Image 1 (cartoon, rainbow, N blue to C red):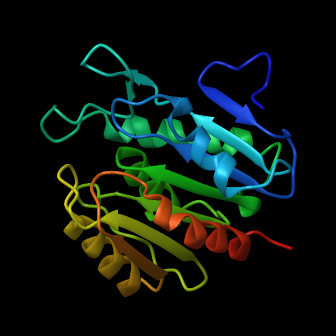
Image 2: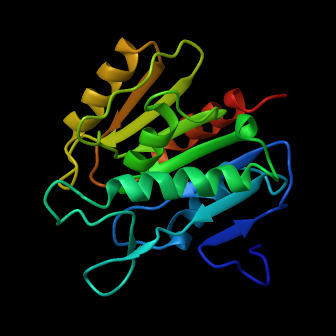
Image 3: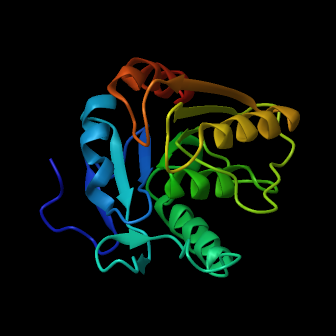
Length: 207
């Protein structure tokens, strides 16, 4: 059940404070509520779930975007990155980042990968990238204790499957334990992934 008085820029499910938190980052042109049904399938009601809304309106007139994909060289990306890091650090006053797993889809996955792995990265419990892609000049920092799960449709017409293959290769070269699950499908989070997603979440949260 969502909270009766939603806060601007995010939607919550479950308790505000919990030993486990899942943060959802939606894709280009969607809204914060886009992945809530997925959260209800993947986690127990005792888990704190926060779905963040991207800060910018989508140029199509509905939905939101983390940055404008149609602008050459994505000039809004640095501000989007800083904004997301600040919001995640604010949420950490309730549930520590070490107990937080990020799950992003498409543009949200690219944002999640960026803030979790570039440079020193945020000290998150885990990261799930669904149909994601690497940002320009993205370089994951050297890690030896982080596990990342990538999923991608092998017939994805929006973000090619090869984008996640590139992500996996770069992450592994930097010492991340990065697994890639492909499935016969397009630009979506297929229900066949649910068991693997649940298993990953359970394995990453402390306790």
